[in-house]
Length: 297
Length: 249
Image (tube, rainbow over the protein chains, first blue to last red):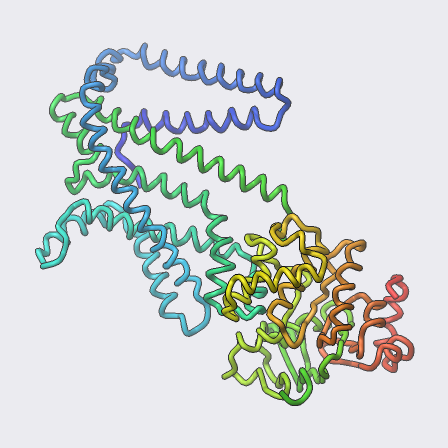
């Protein structure tokens, strides 16, 4: 799953993420004075690091041309409003897909976890589905559904590209998210099911009231991680002609022969993914504290 | 409803190549308290799990009040409603408060209205000194309190028979008494119970009959005075000697 943003922006995303973790680790759990010094050290080292990077870039022989083509302030300001508007399409794709993925993937995971020989066909169906959609590149699913389905011209088949992008993302991501759910279901100890069944709860009641609530709570961080991936993959919609942020920056690029619009798109993606990444870190840290704190049965 | 509370006839159970129960015969009369003693691995826990149908048996029959529950066409959930089990490791539901733990099965299985389930659960909790813990989560309770909640959770289904699987083995020594007191009270109230235990002193006090399990069979059984005072089997004597040597009797 790769996303077409300029490589420099991607690197910066990684660096900033690493930096955030580093400062937290340095400052976390130490006496206040020492903690403050650690933060200061982190800030200074970050500043030095980026200053060196910037110096190397600025002193490269072809820097003025690169600056004009990629970091053009005027083009940035000019293309920003259009791309922001197009980015709203990415947000809509993401939100619609996510709302559909959560229940669909859960259904797949429960199907896959069904035990007993009677449920073999259900299990086989779920496994087949998950294997297939984890194996096929997302872009191919989008191409085939996005061009193929409207091409049928069959009555009742939607022709909206937006519809087929959302459908493709739901199909592909549900396979991943189902596996995340399944890991959660497997992590709930067998004795919990024994306790539920011994009270007279049926298999499905045990699943619903005892296993799933615990499983879902445990997998929230990895679920959010998948959704960061999903946010970025909404840019694949461009490939079948949906005018979202990436497509809009291609259009602007074609107008101006300048690559700065891609930087605008990269900025917008980072602005939405970083908060989600930090929120995920926060949940993981909280989960770790809880496990360390309360023993639990 | 005729015949003894529970009858086991030639019950066998294997896990892979390991035969854990090798022909168990046992009659449990109504209001009896049967204590299963024996070394770890002798089959005590497996026997209790089989009676609750948590483990399917390989051969033999189990009857509850004269009705076979191992015949295949029986409603597992209906059987389990009448046979409560309490586990060594409590197995409370960590995502639910105490009151939710206790009311889950009455609400979902017996279809009891929430208010009624709640009121009955609070009464039970009150009876066992847990009234103020109703809204706590299990991880905020001591081991003894958790185990008492687990007993209350089983009792909330108003079972005819209660199975207790080494319910004090995971507890700190100073917490054992509060749990055993609950079991004493239940015995005094006439609850039919089968308990696997390492608490020999307790077994001697409470049991109507003690069964010594050895390598998957009930080697010897009888009233506690006889079993602890004058055991007839050599292996029973050896087992009890080890217990005495360990200062547990």
